[in-house]
Length: 157
Length: 188
Image (cartoon, rainbow over all chains, first blue to last red; front, side, top):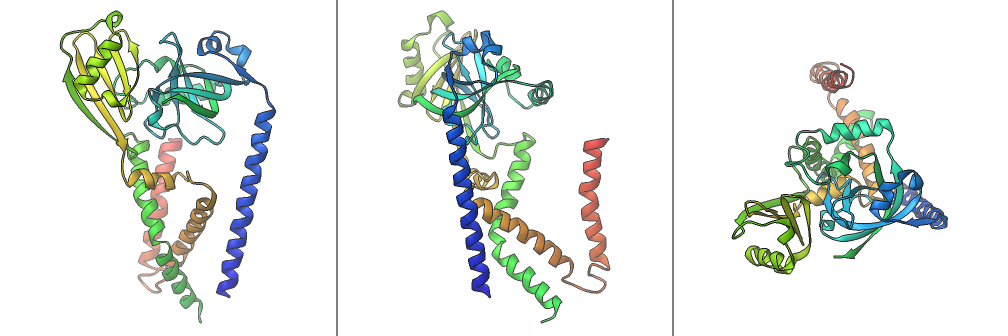
């Protein structure tokens, strides 16, 4: 009886794992078939409508990674001022703090936030303990544009 | 075997089996509660040290040589990554495992070292289901087991101290507290 229960449990786990692997494979195939547009941060923010919901490749130095769960990070353009917010998407769970100061190439979907999301983000931003001091990525944090990253690679460590 | 004996058996065996999981989720639950409330960051430990640059600086004057001097002063030459100016008054030097913020006008430097908090970062890794795969199913099994432990716990004792007596009152209180707080925070 106990052996039967154990075998049923193991079979259930094996089937579930196989399904997960298959689904992940399908998603990767779907991503590969889409066209990827290469752009700089300045280009993206100068004409956001041109890139909205398109898959883009963008790179820059990571200036900040959210300390609470790594659910967003910011990269700065070559001008040293313009920044864009990156949020994890696809199989990315979080961004590690170790990315700060590294130049990273991101691939992802360029998004324009809806009104509801902006309100949520602003509410979070206005949390009094969010940051000890006002930081340079504050504008990018409040901005309605962001990149939902599906893949990234450190260019410089 | 009567149903009460089965009930006691389920409660006891699952209690033993899932002791470790309850501790994992209990400790990481407290940590994440306070992480969400922004009281404390369970994932990382930061140590800040204040130092002084000999003199003041201007943004236009900062070059690789200036950075080398600062890295020498802080003893972080081996850990240098890149630098940039967050604003007109500050210089940020990124290091492996931290950063240095320099206030240009005063020369005040703050070296911040960041490292993962042992134990908690691992527990959070599990609590957030970062491993996915088999962990998903084992933690689901645990959650289901926890429900069984709770239900079997209600029926463990009969009489005045059981579910029909004091136990029932405590159970109702335990249901009402989250319900009242939910109504208060969500709808009032």
